[in-house]
Length: 191
Image (spheres, one colour):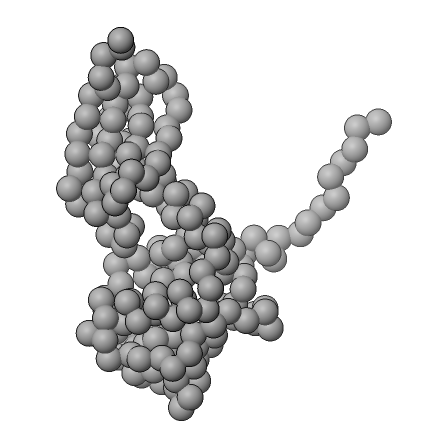
C-alpha cells in the first residue's frame, strides 16, 4: 500500500469560494498535474509535493474557480436564481434588497443584467450561464444593489465593496467582452 500523501488543511478558503474548507494533499508521486474534487462541503486539491506555498495558493484558487465553473454549468433555474439572490442579499446587504422576480433572459446581448426597481425585477443574460459562480454572484449583487440605490454613483460602488470578489468578477467580464471583440480568423487548413 503506498504511503499517504502529505496533507495540509486550510480552514479559510479564498473569499467568495463558497467552500467551507479546502484540504490540500501533496503527493511525491504526482509530478506535474493538479486536480480537485468536492467531498461534502470540503474541496480536496491534489498537488505535487515539490510545489512552493505560493504555487499551492495559486493552484488552490485556480482549481476552486474551475470547480465552480463546472458546477455552474448545471444551470440554475429561475427559482434557484431567486433563492441565490435572496441569500446574497442576506449575506451582503443585510436582506434589504428583496427582488420580486429574478430570471434568465435571452434578449440581453450587450449587458450582463438589468433591474427595474419599481417592479422589483432582475434579469440576467443567458450569456452568464456556465461562467464561474463568483461572476454570476457579482452580477446578481450588482442588480440587487440597484434595488437599494439607482444609478452608479459613489454610494452604489461602496455598497458593492462588501463583495470580496467584485474586482475579480469585473475583470473576468471585461476579459470576455475583449475576447468577443478580437477578430476571428478562419483556421488555416494544411494542404
